[in-house]
Image (cartoon, rainbow, N blue to C red; front, side):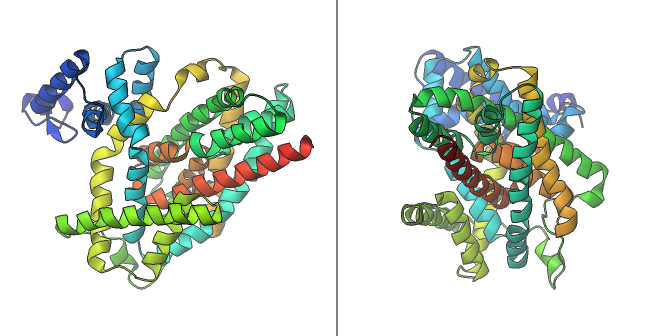
Length: 431
Protein backbone atom coordinates (compact mmCIF):
# COMPACT_ATOMS: atom_id res chain seq x y z
CA UNK A 1 0.00 0.00 0.00
CA UNK A 2 1.36 3.40 -1.00
CA UNK A 3 1.83 6.36 1.27
CA UNK A 4 -0.99 8.26 -0.50
CA UNK A 5 -3.41 5.35 -0.07
CA UNK A 6 -2.57 5.22 3.64
CA UNK A 7 -3.33 8.94 3.96
CA UNK A 8 -6.66 8.61 2.10
CA UNK A 9 -7.74 5.67 4.26
CA UNK A 10 -6.57 7.41 7.46
CA UNK A 11 -4.05 4.63 8.13
CA UNK A 12 -0.95 6.78 7.80
CA UNK A 13 1.37 6.79 10.79
CA UNK A 14 4.30 9.13 11.32
CA UNK A 15 6.54 7.27 13.72
CA UNK A 16 4.29 6.02 16.50
CA UNK A 17 1.37 8.43 15.93
CA UNK A 18 -1.51 8.59 13.42
CA UNK A 19 -0.95 11.43 10.94
CA UNK A 20 -3.66 13.81 12.29
CA UNK A 21 -2.44 13.45 15.88
CA UNK A 22 1.18 13.86 14.74
CA UNK A 23 0.29 17.12 12.97
CA UNK A 24 -1.53 18.50 16.02
CA UNK A 25 1.42 17.69 18.31
CA UNK A 26 3.95 19.13 15.85
CA UNK A 27 2.00 22.38 15.40
CA UNK A 28 1.81 22.88 19.17
CA UNK A 29 5.58 22.34 19.48
CA UNK A 30 6.30 24.76 16.62
CA UNK A 31 4.07 27.43 18.18
CA UNK A 32 5.81 26.98 21.53
CA UNK A 33 9.21 27.33 19.84
CA UNK A 34 8.13 30.51 18.05
CA UNK A 35 6.94 31.95 21.37
CA UNK A 36 10.22 30.96 23.01
CA UNK A 37 8.28 28.70 25.39
CA UNK A 38 9.87 25.30 24.74
CA UNK A 39 11.21 24.08 28.09
CA UNK A 40 14.96 23.52 28.15
CA UNK A 41 14.47 20.11 29.74
CA UNK A 42 14.24 16.48 28.65
CA UNK A 43 10.58 17.09 27.75
CA UNK A 44 11.47 20.01 25.48
CA UNK A 45 14.29 18.02 23.89
CA UNK A 46 12.05 15.05 23.09
CA UNK A 47 9.40 17.44 21.75
CA UNK A 48 11.98 18.62 19.21
CA UNK A 49 13.67 15.41 18.09
CA UNK A 50 10.69 12.99 18.10
CA UNK A 51 8.56 14.69 15.41
CA UNK A 52 11.63 15.66 13.37
CA UNK A 53 13.10 12.15 13.40
CA UNK A 54 9.80 10.34 12.90
CA UNK A 55 8.86 12.55 9.94
CA UNK A 56 12.22 12.20 8.16
CA UNK A 57 12.41 8.47 8.88
CA UNK A 58 8.90 7.89 7.51
CA UNK A 59 9.66 10.06 4.49
CA UNK A 60 12.82 8.06 3.77
CA UNK A 61 10.94 4.77 4.08
CA UNK A 62 8.57 5.89 1.32
CA UNK A 63 11.06 7.17 -1.27
CA UNK A 64 11.22 4.61 -4.11
CA UNK A 65 14.65 3.11 -4.83
CA UNK A 66 16.49 5.28 -2.28
CA UNK A 67 14.70 3.61 0.63
CA UNK A 68 16.75 0.51 -0.19
CA UNK A 69 19.97 2.49 0.26
CA UNK A 70 19.45 3.84 3.75
CA UNK A 71 17.29 6.89 2.91
CA UNK A 72 15.54 6.96 6.34
CA UNK A 73 18.82 7.09 8.26
CA UNK A 74 20.56 9.46 5.85
CA UNK A 75 17.65 11.92 5.77
CA UNK A 76 17.29 11.83 9.56
CA UNK A 77 20.96 12.71 9.98
CA UNK A 78 21.66 15.09 7.09
CA UNK A 79 18.45 17.16 6.77
CA UNK A 80 18.54 18.57 10.35
CA UNK A 81 22.20 19.41 9.83
CA UNK A 82 21.41 21.25 6.59
CA UNK A 83 18.51 23.10 8.21
CA UNK A 84 20.75 24.17 11.07
CA UNK A 85 23.46 25.22 8.61
CA UNK A 86 20.94 27.59 6.99
CA UNK A 87 19.78 28.81 10.45
CA UNK A 88 16.22 27.49 10.14
CA UNK A 89 15.97 26.59 13.83
CA UNK A 90 15.59 29.28 16.48
CA UNK A 91 17.70 29.41 19.63
CA UNK A 92 14.92 28.04 21.85
CA UNK A 93 14.61 24.89 19.73
CA UNK A 94 18.36 24.32 19.68
CA UNK A 95 18.66 24.88 23.43
CA UNK A 96 15.91 22.35 24.17
CA UNK A 97 17.55 19.77 21.90
CA UNK A 98 20.97 20.51 23.41
CA UNK A 99 19.65 19.80 26.91
CA UNK A 100 18.62 16.30 25.85
CA UNK A 101 21.41 15.43 23.43
CA UNK A 102 24.46 17.04 25.06
CA UNK A 103 23.74 17.96 28.67
CA UNK A 104 21.88 14.70 29.42
CA UNK A 105 23.80 12.74 26.74
CA UNK A 106 20.85 10.76 25.39
CA UNK A 107 23.23 9.14 22.89
CA UNK A 108 25.07 7.28 25.68
CA UNK A 109 21.77 6.08 27.17
CA UNK A 110 20.66 4.85 23.73
CA UNK A 111 23.94 3.03 23.08
CA UNK A 112 23.97 1.47 26.56
CA UNK A 113 20.41 0.24 25.98
CA UNK A 114 21.34 -1.36 22.67
CA UNK A 115 24.64 -2.82 23.86
CA UNK A 116 23.24 -4.42 27.00
CA UNK A 117 20.02 -5.56 25.35
CA UNK A 118 21.66 -7.12 22.31
CA UNK A 119 24.44 -8.82 24.31
CA UNK A 120 22.10 -10.22 26.95
CA UNK A 121 19.75 -11.41 24.21
CA UNK A 122 22.53 -13.07 22.19
CA UNK A 123 23.62 -16.70 22.46
CA UNK A 124 26.86 -17.09 24.44
CA UNK A 125 28.70 -18.95 21.66
CA UNK A 126 27.78 -16.40 18.96
CA UNK A 127 28.81 -13.57 21.29
CA UNK A 128 32.28 -14.90 22.11
CA UNK A 129 33.07 -16.06 18.57
CA UNK A 130 31.99 -12.71 17.15
CA UNK A 131 34.29 -10.71 19.44
CA UNK A 132 37.27 -12.99 18.77
CA UNK A 133 36.94 -13.07 14.99
CA UNK A 134 36.36 -9.35 14.48
CA UNK A 135 39.73 -8.41 15.98
CA UNK A 136 41.72 -9.45 12.90
CA UNK A 137 39.85 -7.32 10.32
CA UNK A 138 39.79 -4.45 12.83
CA UNK A 139 43.58 -4.37 13.23
CA UNK A 140 44.34 -5.21 9.60
CA UNK A 141 41.84 -2.64 8.34
CA UNK A 142 43.43 0.07 10.46
CA UNK A 143 46.89 -0.62 9.00
CA UNK A 144 45.75 -0.98 5.39
CA UNK A 145 43.56 2.13 5.56
CA UNK A 146 46.52 4.17 6.80
CA UNK A 147 48.72 2.84 4.00
CA UNK A 148 46.15 3.37 1.24
CA UNK A 149 45.00 6.75 2.55
CA UNK A 150 48.52 8.15 2.74
CA UNK A 151 49.40 6.73 -0.69
CA UNK A 152 46.37 8.32 -2.36
CA UNK A 153 46.99 11.68 -0.66
CA UNK A 154 50.65 11.66 -1.68
CA UNK A 155 49.63 10.83 -5.26
CA UNK A 156 47.60 14.07 -5.21
CA UNK A 157 50.61 16.04 -4.00
CA UNK A 158 50.01 16.05 -0.26
CA UNK A 159 52.79 15.51 2.29
CA UNK A 160 52.64 12.05 3.93
CA UNK A 161 52.77 13.44 7.46
CA UNK A 162 49.94 15.87 6.81
CA UNK A 163 47.90 13.13 5.14
CA UNK A 164 48.35 10.71 8.03
CA UNK A 165 47.90 13.10 10.94
CA UNK A 166 45.14 15.29 9.49
CA UNK A 167 43.14 12.94 7.26
CA UNK A 168 43.73 9.26 8.03
CA UNK A 169 43.92 9.51 11.82
CA UNK A 170 40.75 11.57 12.42
CA UNK A 171 38.75 9.29 10.13
CA UNK A 172 39.87 6.21 12.09
CA UNK A 173 40.08 7.73 15.59
CA UNK A 174 36.61 6.72 16.76
CA UNK A 175 34.61 9.92 16.54
CA UNK A 176 34.88 13.45 17.87
CA UNK A 177 34.82 13.10 21.65
CA UNK A 178 36.98 10.00 21.96
CA UNK A 179 39.02 10.65 18.80
CA UNK A 180 39.37 14.16 17.41
CA UNK A 181 39.46 15.93 20.77
CA UNK A 182 42.06 13.48 22.10
CA UNK A 183 44.20 13.87 18.97
CA UNK A 184 43.88 17.66 19.14
CA UNK A 185 45.02 17.66 22.74
CA UNK A 186 48.02 15.47 21.86
CA UNK A 187 48.95 17.57 18.81
CA UNK A 188 48.67 20.76 20.86
CA UNK A 189 50.95 19.46 23.60
CA UNK A 190 53.56 18.05 21.22
CA UNK A 191 53.65 20.95 18.75
CA UNK A 192 52.97 23.73 21.30
CA UNK A 193 50.18 25.20 19.19
CA UNK A 194 46.59 26.26 19.91
CA UNK A 195 44.25 23.35 20.69
CA UNK A 196 41.26 24.84 18.83
CA UNK A 197 43.28 25.08 15.62
CA UNK A 198 43.64 21.30 15.54
CA UNK A 199 39.99 20.67 16.44
CA UNK A 200 38.78 22.69 13.44
CA UNK A 201 41.37 21.01 11.19
CA UNK A 202 40.47 17.43 12.18
CA UNK A 203 36.68 17.47 12.48
CA UNK A 204 35.93 17.70 8.71
CA UNK A 205 37.71 14.39 8.01
CA UNK A 206 35.61 12.69 10.68
CA UNK A 207 32.33 14.08 9.33
CA UNK A 208 33.12 13.26 5.69
CA UNK A 209 34.38 9.79 6.64
CA UNK A 210 31.14 9.16 8.50
CA UNK A 211 29.08 10.13 5.45
CA UNK A 212 30.94 7.75 3.15
CA UNK A 213 30.81 4.97 5.76
CA UNK A 214 27.01 5.31 5.72
CA UNK A 215 27.04 5.31 1.91
CA UNK A 216 29.20 2.17 1.66
CA UNK A 217 27.02 0.47 4.27
CA UNK A 218 23.87 1.24 2.29
CA UNK A 219 25.44 -0.28 -0.82
CA UNK A 220 26.69 -3.32 1.12
CA UNK A 221 23.26 -3.86 2.66
CA UNK A 222 21.72 -3.81 -0.80
CA UNK A 223 24.31 -6.33 -2.01
CA UNK A 224 23.19 -8.59 0.84
CA UNK A 225 19.61 -8.37 -0.43
CA UNK A 226 20.59 -9.14 -4.02
CA UNK A 227 23.02 -11.92 -3.01
CA UNK A 228 21.53 -13.49 0.15
CA UNK A 229 24.37 -16.01 0.54
CA UNK A 230 26.70 -13.12 1.46
CA UNK A 231 24.46 -11.93 4.27
CA UNK A 232 23.82 -13.33 7.73
CA UNK A 233 20.71 -11.10 8.02
CA UNK A 234 22.07 -9.61 11.22
CA UNK A 235 24.22 -12.54 12.34
CA UNK A 236 27.98 -11.91 12.21
CA UNK A 237 29.56 -15.35 12.52
CA UNK A 238 28.96 -18.57 10.61
CA UNK A 239 28.78 -21.15 13.33
CA UNK A 240 26.92 -24.39 14.00
CA UNK A 241 26.04 -25.72 17.43
CA UNK A 242 23.20 -27.45 19.19
CA UNK A 243 20.34 -25.02 19.62
CA UNK A 244 21.47 -22.59 16.90
CA UNK A 245 18.10 -22.48 15.16
CA UNK A 246 16.40 -21.86 18.49
CA UNK A 247 18.88 -19.08 19.34
CA UNK A 248 18.18 -17.26 16.06
CA UNK A 249 14.40 -17.24 16.46
CA UNK A 250 12.70 -13.95 17.30
CA UNK A 251 11.46 -13.86 20.88
CA UNK A 252 7.65 -13.79 20.73
CA UNK A 253 7.25 -13.54 24.51
CA UNK A 254 4.69 -10.85 25.52
CA UNK A 255 6.23 -7.60 26.73
CA UNK A 256 7.01 -7.62 30.44
CA UNK A 257 6.98 -4.02 31.75
CA UNK A 258 8.45 -5.09 35.10
CA UNK A 259 11.38 -6.89 33.45
CA UNK A 260 11.96 -3.94 31.11
CA UNK A 261 12.17 -1.50 34.01
CA UNK A 262 14.67 -3.85 35.65
CA UNK A 263 16.67 -3.80 32.41
CA UNK A 264 17.10 -0.03 32.71
CA UNK A 265 18.64 -0.50 36.15
CA UNK A 266 20.93 -3.25 34.84
CA UNK A 267 22.19 -1.16 31.90
CA UNK A 268 22.74 1.85 34.17
CA UNK A 269 24.69 -0.30 36.64
CA UNK A 270 26.85 -1.87 33.93
CA UNK A 271 27.56 1.54 32.39
CA UNK A 272 28.58 3.01 35.76
CA UNK A 273 30.71 -0.08 36.44
CA UNK A 274 32.51 0.56 33.15
CA UNK A 275 33.15 4.18 34.18
CA UNK A 276 34.61 3.02 37.52
CA UNK A 277 36.93 0.59 35.72
CA UNK A 278 37.98 3.38 33.34
CA UNK A 279 39.34 5.36 36.29
CA UNK A 280 41.41 2.36 37.35
CA UNK A 281 42.57 1.03 33.98
CA UNK A 282 42.50 4.25 31.84
CA UNK A 283 40.75 2.15 29.18
CA UNK A 284 37.56 3.45 27.47
CA UNK A 285 34.60 2.99 29.81
CA UNK A 286 32.10 1.96 27.10
CA UNK A 287 34.42 -0.87 25.98
CA UNK A 288 34.76 -2.03 29.58
CA UNK A 289 30.97 -1.93 29.89
CA UNK A 290 30.74 -4.22 26.86
CA UNK A 291 33.28 -6.63 28.35
CA UNK A 292 31.44 -6.60 31.69
CA UNK A 293 28.08 -7.23 30.00
CA UNK A 294 29.57 -10.06 27.92
CA UNK A 295 31.00 -11.64 31.10
CA UNK A 296 27.62 -11.37 32.83
CA UNK A 297 26.01 -13.08 29.84
CA UNK A 298 28.68 -15.76 29.43
CA UNK A 299 28.63 -16.81 33.09
CA UNK A 300 24.82 -16.57 33.26
CA UNK A 301 24.82 -14.20 36.22
CA UNK A 302 21.35 -12.78 35.50
CA UNK A 303 17.95 -14.50 35.63
CA UNK A 304 16.45 -15.36 32.25
CA UNK A 305 13.58 -12.93 32.91
CA UNK A 306 16.02 -10.02 33.28
CA UNK A 307 17.87 -11.00 30.09
CA UNK A 308 14.54 -11.16 28.27
CA UNK A 309 13.53 -7.78 29.68
CA UNK A 310 16.83 -6.28 28.49
CA UNK A 311 16.24 -7.61 25.00
CA UNK A 312 12.69 -6.22 24.97
CA UNK A 313 13.96 -2.84 26.17
CA UNK A 314 16.55 -2.84 23.37
CA UNK A 315 13.82 -3.52 20.79
CA UNK A 316 11.64 -0.75 22.22
CA UNK A 317 14.44 1.82 22.16
CA UNK A 318 15.82 0.88 18.72
CA UNK A 319 12.35 0.64 17.19
CA UNK A 320 11.09 4.03 18.38
CA UNK A 321 14.04 6.32 19.08
CA UNK A 322 16.61 5.60 16.36
CA UNK A 323 15.50 8.22 13.81
CA UNK A 324 14.73 10.89 16.45
CA UNK A 325 18.18 10.30 17.95
CA UNK A 326 19.78 10.69 14.53
CA UNK A 327 17.83 13.91 13.97
CA UNK A 328 19.23 15.24 17.23
CA UNK A 329 22.73 14.17 16.25
CA UNK A 330 22.45 15.86 12.86
CA UNK A 331 21.09 18.98 14.50
CA UNK A 332 23.89 19.38 17.04
CA UNK A 333 26.86 17.17 16.15
CA UNK A 334 27.30 17.44 12.37
CA UNK A 335 29.09 20.73 11.65
CA UNK A 336 28.63 21.28 7.91
CA UNK A 337 30.29 24.70 8.06
CA UNK A 338 33.66 23.16 8.93
CA UNK A 339 33.24 20.58 6.16
CA UNK A 340 32.44 23.14 3.47
CA UNK A 341 35.71 24.97 4.17
CA UNK A 342 37.87 21.98 3.13
CA UNK A 343 35.86 20.62 0.22
CA UNK A 344 38.32 19.56 -2.49
CA UNK A 345 38.24 16.62 -4.88
CA UNK A 346 41.57 15.13 -3.64
CA UNK A 347 40.34 15.38 -0.03
CA UNK A 348 37.15 13.51 -0.88
CA UNK A 349 38.93 10.84 -2.91
CA UNK A 350 41.45 10.24 -0.11
CA UNK A 351 38.69 9.72 2.46
CA UNK A 352 36.71 7.51 0.08
CA UNK A 353 39.84 5.36 -0.34
CA UNK A 354 40.25 5.10 3.45
CA UNK A 355 36.63 4.08 4.07
CA UNK A 356 36.56 1.70 1.10
CA UNK A 357 39.73 -0.02 2.33
CA UNK A 358 38.37 -0.49 5.84
CA UNK A 359 35.04 -1.80 4.55
CA UNK A 360 36.58 -4.22 2.05
CA UNK A 361 39.09 -5.51 4.60
CA UNK A 362 36.20 -6.79 6.68
CA UNK A 363 34.49 -8.17 3.58
CA UNK A 364 37.56 -10.11 2.38
CA UNK A 365 38.65 -11.31 5.84
CA UNK A 366 35.20 -12.75 6.46
CA UNK A 367 35.83 -15.55 3.96
CA UNK A 368 38.80 -16.76 6.00
CA UNK A 369 37.25 -16.25 9.43
CA UNK A 370 33.83 -17.83 8.83
CA UNK A 371 31.93 -14.57 9.13
CA UNK A 372 29.20 -13.27 6.88
CA UNK A 373 30.78 -10.79 4.41
CA UNK A 374 28.04 -8.15 4.55
CA UNK A 375 27.95 -8.00 8.35
CA UNK A 376 31.76 -8.08 8.63
CA UNK A 377 32.04 -5.22 6.14
CA UNK A 378 29.44 -3.16 8.01
CA UNK A 379 31.21 -3.64 11.35
CA UNK A 380 34.51 -2.64 9.73
CA UNK A 381 32.88 0.48 8.26
CA UNK A 382 32.04 1.58 11.79
CA UNK A 383 35.77 2.15 12.35
CA UNK A 384 35.59 5.11 9.97
CA UNK A 385 32.43 6.59 11.47
CA UNK A 386 31.84 9.27 14.09
CA UNK A 387 32.06 7.08 17.17
CA UNK A 388 28.70 6.29 18.76
CA UNK A 389 26.98 8.73 16.40
CA UNK A 390 28.43 6.90 13.41
CA UNK A 391 27.59 3.46 14.79
CA UNK A 392 23.94 4.41 15.13
CA UNK A 393 23.80 5.93 11.64
CA UNK A 394 25.66 3.06 9.98
CA UNK A 395 23.78 0.21 11.66
CA UNK A 396 20.37 1.83 11.23
CA UNK A 397 21.13 2.33 7.54
CA UNK A 398 21.67 -1.42 7.25
CA UNK A 399 18.82 -2.27 9.66
CA UNK A 400 21.26 -4.22 11.86
CA UNK A 401 21.11 -2.47 15.22
CA UNK A 402 21.69 -5.83 16.96
CA UNK A 403 25.34 -5.59 15.88
CA UNK A 404 25.89 -2.58 18.16
CA UNK A 405 28.18 -4.44 20.65
CA UNK A 406 30.58 -5.41 17.85
CA UNK A 407 30.36 -1.94 16.29
CA UNK A 408 31.17 -0.31 19.62
CA UNK A 409 34.25 -2.50 20.10
CA UNK A 410 35.45 -1.77 16.55
CA UNK A 411 34.86 1.96 17.07
CA UNK A 412 36.05 2.43 20.65
CA UNK A 413 38.90 -0.07 20.76
CA UNK A 414 40.01 0.58 17.18
CA UNK A 415 39.75 4.32 17.77
CA UNK A 416 41.75 4.14 21.00
CA UNK A 417 44.50 2.16 19.26
CA UNK A 418 44.57 4.73 16.45
CA UNK A 419 44.84 7.65 18.88
CA UNK A 420 47.61 5.95 20.87
CA UNK A 421 49.66 4.95 17.81
CA UNK A 422 49.20 8.36 16.14
CA UNK A 423 50.26 10.21 19.29
CA UNK A 424 53.31 7.96 19.71
CA UNK A 425 54.36 8.51 16.08
CA UNK A 426 53.99 12.29 16.27
CA UNK A 427 55.93 12.40 19.53
CA UNK A 428 58.71 10.33 17.91
CA UNK A 429 58.87 12.59 14.83
CA UNK A 430 59.04 15.76 16.95
CA UNK A 431 61.40 14.68 19.70
